[in-house]
Amino acid sequence: MRVQYFTQLCRLSLAALTVFALTACGQGSSNSSSSSSGSSSGASGASASSSSSSPSALSTAAVDCPYNGTYTGSYSTTGTMTATWSWTCTGARRNLTGNGLPNHSVGNFPNLGNPNTISAQFVSSSMTLTPTKAASNVLLGGPQGVIAYARNSVKFDPGTAGTCPSTATVASMCNLANGTDTLRLEALGPNDGSRVFDFGVDTNNAHVQPGGVYHYHGVPEGLLTNAGVSASLKKMVLVGWAADGYPVYARYCYSSAMDATSALKVCKGSYALVAAPVAGRPAISWAPLGWFTQDWTYSAGSGDLDDCNGRTGVTPEFPSGIYYYMVTDTYPYYGRCLKGPIN
Image 1: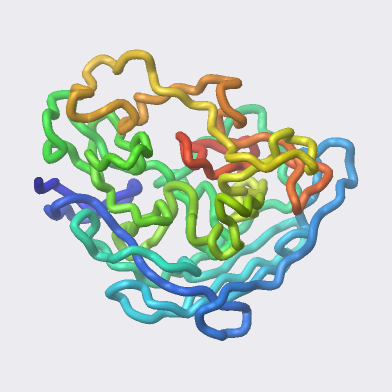
Image 2 (image 1 turned 30 degrees about the vertical axis):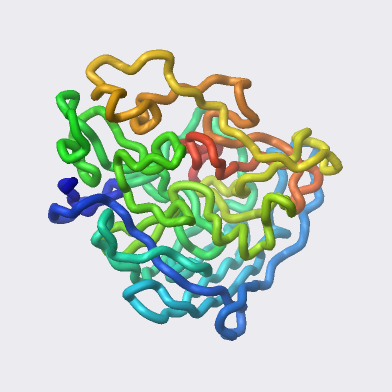
């Protein structure tokens, strides 16, 4: 089934083109801050002890200041390239430069669902070293700005610009890249293995935007693999930094948020499917609940995390506690809002 794909997967605008579905992925192997190919490493700070009784007042300057690395690998049809990333801290700011290439294997790009080819980017970002809570949630992502960067300089961009009209009866009637309807599509859908709408994500829950931008929609599996994480060897792994300065972890968190001796578990978001489809939604007989943003509702206390997919607790890098975000296997996969102001 052919689907109209106007290659803007995450709210970027480019000329439309028709492809079979929307997928995008690449490949590589990891390296260190020297340039030895095929292995992953980087220089990083240790843990931060609290200088205040309030976790929200904690400075993050003792972690990833600096953190640098390179990785040389094969990026699908693009061939061999070298990923670079550099985190430094100056004054009150954490600064990132990199080329947006992942330091792990990726899928095949272009492919049936994604016509885009991975390419190196110029990444430059800065965030505060002393994050604090804002009076209200800050919405970010897509054209509003990057919500977070992984430590390898690949961005997290969980939303899409894909939409469907209420009259849609098959996927080909929807615009998966730059739609203008109100029913917004989710790249990972209900995360049940179905591919009613094929956004072309690879095994890292990532794909490629027009211009060659590889980016994550969910758990960056390659980063966890690099850290030696598996179902039998759980670790709470720092995978990135959000635009408000708070750290980002993936999949595993402590069972008791403020107890580092408690067992690690799969952290779950606190969103649930709506009891009934919203008015005007395409029939669930062909588009099951979970594929549209409007299919989900925040249900406080139903999971481990708040409405921005975060919580306050201890982590290996912050043993006295800090607010942090989680990338989860459950919706919203990566949060769509921030708790801190963008300074």
